[in-house]
Image (tube, rainbow, N blue to C red):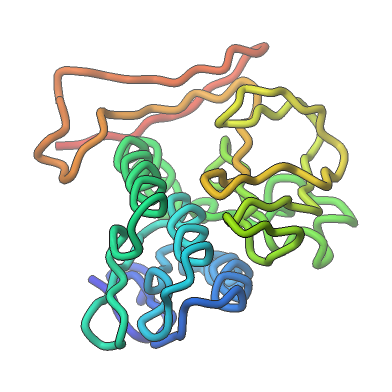
Length: 254
């Protein structure tokens, strides 16, 4: 159920949607990141917005950057037919089609992890977590980390929300990524980073979202699928990052 608005208690029944917005510009991504975090802090963990907005669009880089970061959000809402430009993930051709497809496949693979942190959000921490909820400090209490978040306990996501040093193909860098104390692993390269610092000039080619895994993470997954009927129920998949003693509670039902 997706609701435009609601009173106290709406979180028990519906995902809240941020309303009609214009995509195709960086501002659309930028303001939605702290909006989502604020929703979770307000007791409403189920939050979504239209992929690349309802209106506007046809900006290849903004389109795929939106598909990338919303892989690590509760829901991706693809509204089409209201604006002049279709918003399907394949609408802009290659290489955007393949990039978006790979992130949609990843979202489908993460269903057990997402389901587990959604269960936790019933009476615990929200699905998308402001940094200070897990790593409180004078630094995270301010605005310095308002454009990054934790997706459950194990993923740290720093969306590309502005053009910093972009080239004609959409390749860029990301500044201001705060890694808390501990070891963090680049999800796509496997490179390990020491925490307790801010990373600048982080390379983000057009296909890459800055995603870091907390060392020791256990990530339950399934095979990539177009709908849940394609999930192989006889197979359990776990991505494990061995480090010290760690645990993750997976929630499943029928």
